[in-house]
Amino acid sequence: MQYCHDLFSEDGQVCFVDYKTGAFECDVDTRELNHVWKRPLCHCHTIDRMLWVGDNTPYVWAQRPCETMFFDREIGREWLCNRAKCAIFDFCVKLKLTFCQLLEL
Image (cartoon, rainbow, N blue to C red; front, side):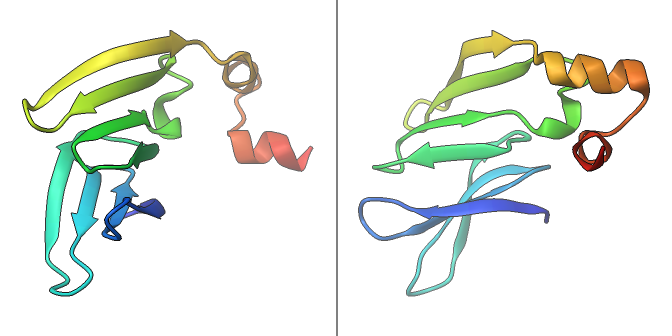
């Protein structure tokens, strides 16, 4: 797993994102993992662990626009909320640089 970040839901459960596989929740008492949203993600947030919002991984931003999605866990459906091409990544592609290399310039 490549952890991106973690957060706590309103009920105190730990939720975290793995770049490659998606969003998980972890019961703090049993440490049981539940793979909630199965898709590559970079960030996500939830309050009630039923409705989630997230964005796609930055590893693909040079190939396709950044996307923000909404996920309803109860029905297992995802909606695209926003798609935006990030100009900085176009610039990196033209110069054949990674984003981290650009930051070092």
